[in-house]
Length: 293
Image (cartoon, rainbow, N blue to C red):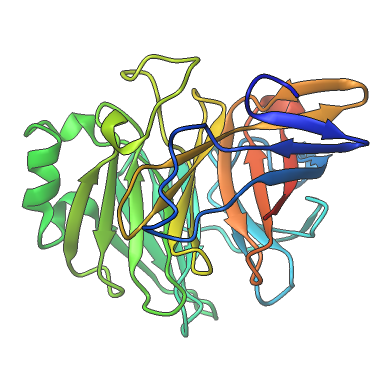
């Protein structure tokens, strides 16, 4: 057993939730994560140098990701190798997250610097619609949660419910906020503060520095996965209420057990039994695979 959160069984690394932070009566939470493997993810020649968001790509059967320093969307296979680079998106800067709108296949790309969502059509001529978060009806709730200071808005992750089309965006920290938007991005419906009282805590970093980077909707378990860079962990938050479940992000490097540095994007496969995490760690960036039980 490694700490209170992981154990080795043969070559299998199993990650357990933080004790005392479960509420099985309110949702169907994951019991554990099992580390399966990882692959290098920094690919300078292809332009993927600062990987951020991650989502499944139903066209290729692989994944879509973005890089902080690029206006492109990248296709990768299930080993993290770039298989295609999609057309440059005019006006996009500092992309941090990516998700797909159900039905239309539009790519929703979250830009932190502009605090905006770029909705890009799936087919030529790849029409782009830009929606600034603070200009969407209902943004008064978001302004209030930011204490009236728009400079505190630094969105990092985005995900979509593939059935209802509901969109969620997360503000990184100070304050950590989960923002719920309508499928058409024409209304902010709710803003939730991701507080320590809701289980967003880490043994390694103070509350003021704990962040949330990536988002992934989990339809099977009725919740949302959230990666944390500074916390070096994943949170699973049941949408029906109750505290978050925390999993320290560990991986096996030869004989060594390490923690993931700079975890960013997170997504699940369609069956909901595999979870994928990417790190933005320069030339040491990696693509990690976990089983979910």
